[in-house]
Amino acid sequence: MPEHPPAADDPFPAWVDALQRRHRQTLTFAEVRKGLQALSSLYVERRAKIAGGAALEGAGKRAAFALYYGPAHFLLVRAIVRALETRSIPLRTVLDLGCGTGAAGAAWALETGAAVEGVDRSGWAVEEARWTLARLRLRGTAKKGDAAGAILPAPPAGVVSAFTVNELDPVARTRLLATLREAPARGVRVLIIEPLARRALTWWDEWAAAFVAAGGRQDEWRFEGLLPDRVAELGRAAGLDTRTLGGRSLFL
Image 1 (cartoon, one colour):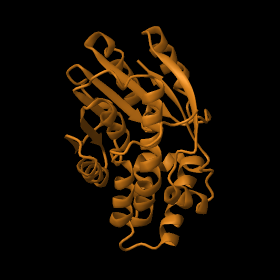
Image 2: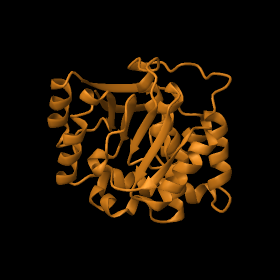
Image 3: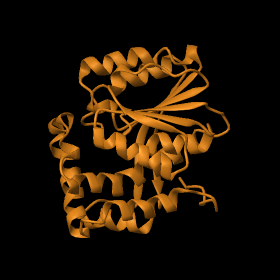
Image 4: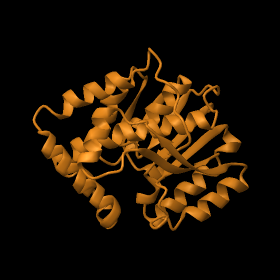
C-alpha cells in the first residue's frame, strides 16, 4: 500500500536528522548496528527477557531503538492512521501506552492536532519521548508509569499502544482490555498495533473478538518503501528486511 508523499512542512525528516546527531555523538555505526542486532534477537528469540527491561540495557541498544525502531514505528503508525481514514477526526489528546521514544503517539497526534500523553516504565524512554515531542513541535509530555493501569483521557481523545500489549503479563493485559472496552461509550478511539507474526500473540484472538464485538475492526498491513535511506541502511546492516513495514492492528 503506497504512502502519502512527504509534505513540505513534514517535521519527520528533521526529527530523523536530529536523532542521528543525538545518538551518534559517542557511538560508531558498527556499535549501533551491533545494538540493533541484539535488539532484534531479543524480539525474535529471547522475548522472556524483554519484560525485565533488557531491550533498553546499554547505550548501543538504546541508540538502535531510537534510530531504527523509533522512525519505523512512527512511519507505520502514520500509514495506518491514514489508511483508517481517521485524520479528519479532531482529537484533544492521544494517550500513548508504553510510549517508548514517543513515536507512535506523535505520529497520530501530528495527523489530528492533538497533544500527547506518554506513559512508559522506562525512565530513559520517558526522557526520550519528551525530547521527541519537543523536536516534532507537539504539545504534551511523558511520565513514568504502568501502561496497564491507564485511565482513559477525556474525549475527544485517542489511545494508542504500539508493540506494547504483548509485553504485558496476562493479568495486566486482561486489566487493560477491560479499560479499553469502555472507550467507545466515553468517546475515545483506540488503536493497538503488534507485529504480523502470530507466534507470540496468544492473546490476539481474544482481543480481536472483543474489539469487533464493540464495533471495531482488525487489519493486517504491509507498506513498502517507507523508511528513509539512513534508517534503512542501519536495518540492512543488522540483517533486517527493510523493504516493507508491517503490522496487525485493532481499531475501536
